[in-house]
Image (cartoon, rainbow, N blue to C red; front, side):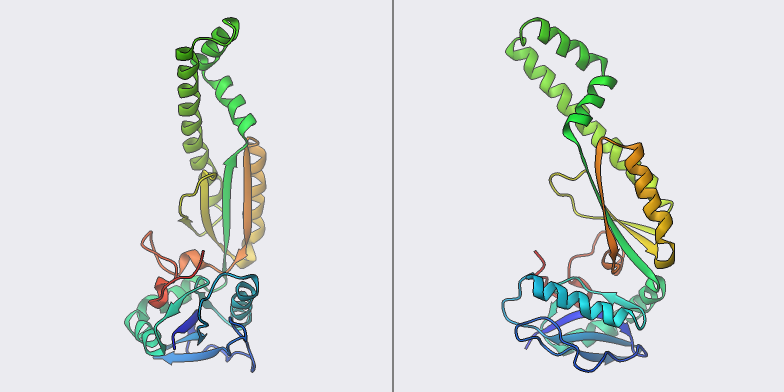
Length: 256
């Protein structure tokens, strides 16, 4: 049977409470696989696992219980390895990396920040900052809407200016927040968001980071800025952009 992986901890990490239940219906008992100085929190993996609310909560609960007793490297929901031996094999192969990550991430949490433009507000900015756009828009207005070519040209100018503003604002959000964090991880691009960044923050220093988020909202009122956290530091278990969901346990990911 395949093995579901919740997280990785030190072998000396205090044991989980008796009766801890994980994902699945019925819920699979959580157990500990040990290899060298490391341990993996696992259970049997249910067939056809999907990110249903009950299983997402169960995954989070295991990490919360374990994390309350000591540092745990969280795996993303849906991390599944072929069997227990595959998990312990990865622990042995990457032992030095996981020990370093456990030291680095001890006492740290993650805040994910996403930002998008408020359409009307950013168009106002673009018009105010670009004389060519303002002049062409006024000429079209006086001409009763303008020719097809002039309207097409105006649309192209506005689209290019908005794209440039997205790049500028994404850099500004990062500058505004990274000074209050210990590390930054760039998330995957997705439609509708010009920023998708995760910040590693000391659990006891979250207040200055959240204050920086609030200040960024005030300084950039044409943005919708969302901060989600504190979260387990999922984005910082694996270094660099090569991370794939579930890869830390040699796993496939059912996250969707």
